[in-house]
Structure formats: C-alpha cells, structure tokens
Amino acid sequence: MSRNFVKLSKILFWGCLLLPVAANGGRTPREFSLQAASPGFWDLISKDSKLSVVITGLGFTEGPVWDSRGFLYVSDEELNKIFRIDANGHKEELISLGDPDGNTYDAHHDLIDCASVLRAIIRIQPDGHYTILADKYEGKRFNSPNDVVMGPDGAIYFTDPTLDLPKGEKQELDFQGVFRLDAQGKVALLTKDLTQPNGLAFSPDGTRLYVDDSEKKNIRVYDFRDGAVSNGRIFGEEPGGKGDGVPDGIRIDREGNLYVTGPQGLWVWDSSGHHLGTIVIPEQPANLAWGDSDLKTLYITATTSVYKLQTKVPGFVPYLSAGN
Image 1 (spheres, rainbow, N blue to C red):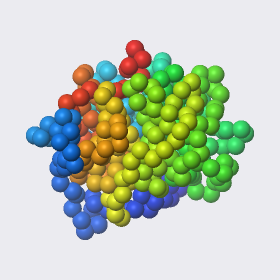
Image 2: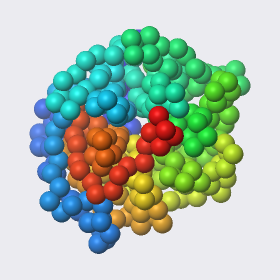
Image 3: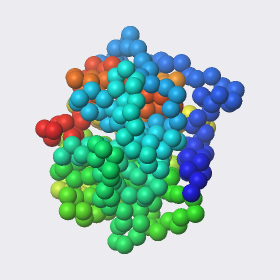
C-alpha cells in the first residue's frame, strides 16, 4: 500500500499546506509574528515571546504528547514513525507504524494513537508493541481515526474523518463521526454533524467538547454530560485562502482559552468565541501540546519541525489533571 497517496491526499485537501516551506515551491517560510485582534491576547502571550525550534528535518509532524519525564512523543506521518523527542531535539524511534496521527495518554498513562493505516485506535507500550483497542462501530470499520483526547470521565474520545482513508480501501461507515471508547472497549457515536471532524478538546470544567471541521473551516462546541453531547453549535470560523491552512489540532489553557491550528498558524480564542489573535508560525502547524514543568510551553508540530513557545497561562492537560 502506498503511503505517498495517503499523505498526498491530505495535503491536497488542506489546500497544499506544504507549499510555504517546500524546497521547490518558490516560496519562503512565513515569519513568526504575534498578531493581536484584541488586547486580551497579551494577557496570554508576552509581546516579546520568541519561537524556538526543538527539531527540524522531519517529514510531517503530528500528535505531540508531553511526558512529565521531559520529552514528547511525536508522530511523523510521512516517515511512518512515532518518536520520543527530548528538549535538546534528540529523537528516538518508538515504533514504525503506517501514518500515525493524533496521540494522547489515557488515565493509566498509556500512549493512545490514531493509527490511520490500521483504521484503529491503538495502545502502544514503551517497548513499541501495540494493542488494537477498537477498529469498528456496529461491525463496520472506522474511516481513518485522526485525533484523540481523554475525557473528564476517563474515556477516550476521537474523530474519524476520511482524510487518511488508505488507497484502495472502501469507506464502510456512511458518515464521519466523533466517538467515545470506554474502558470495556464499547464504542459509542457522539455525533455525525461534521463533514471532516479533526481536532477535539474538552473545557477544563468538563462541560464542553470542542471539535473542529477541516472542510467547513469552523469549530463546533457541544454541551457535554455523562459521556454524551448535545446542543451542537458553531463556536468560531477560521477562514483562509489556499495554502493558508485549516482548523486541525486544539488545546485549551486552564482559563478556558482555545489555541487552534488554522490559517497562518495558531488562532487564539477566548471561551466566549472571540478571536483574540493569531500566532503566525513559519511552517503550517497541524497540532500542539502543553509541556514543561509549569505547562506554560506550547509545543507545536508544524510540517517538518517541532517548535515551542512560552505562554503566560498554564495549559489544561486531561491526563495530568486526572492525577497521573
């Protein structure tokens, strides 16, 4: 099976995200900048904040997960590997796996991955061995699980668009859904409202679930209670031109502000749906994670690199907030 097709299909769908940094694309990377749309932006980001490169020269980075021992797990969808990457940029292979995507730790501090080629949610052990936790809903295979988070109830929540559906394989579900996976392996459908659901995150108080839609270029929010969602509505829109990027990964700080990948970089939103500003990143980001001992550093997976940026407010990390 050709992984090049899968990667190419995602790039084409996203409007040629890699063009700004392609060696032969005739365009130079964007310059890092902080663009405030509201004075509240500066309550979250210092005006003199600097963007640092942790590592570069990778294929297509995704799914960062911070480990309190001082390293990140990072997926590389083009090299088909998940790496451990330390603060000095040293990388070590955890596993070779076709098109790994979003990751999280669960309540037991096990690494959970969206394995696109397997069309499954898997648990990966520190030695690289994995177990399939779920790959079907009502007897039909998932499309291509994309991003995953731990919920306030300890269950696993994930999106299942068709962005990475492997070449030559049929879509068995007739929708792109958002699902819940409990500790007993039961899969429940939360919603099929979205066209291409991608990043997702819970509010710190556990009462809201945010999910973005890469095709519609918007963010939806749902009321959340007892493992179910209701009252879905548009939270915000992230319009942009070809090659600017689309909504993808989402992270939330402890005050409830959202940091969402989008056109030109990271869009920062308050919990009421006001766009506070944009963090322009040289390469188009796909995802991000809070890290370091104070959880005030955003680690950003952006095309061939991983960057980091200091913020003023600590991040909300479900698996750490749960006492792990």
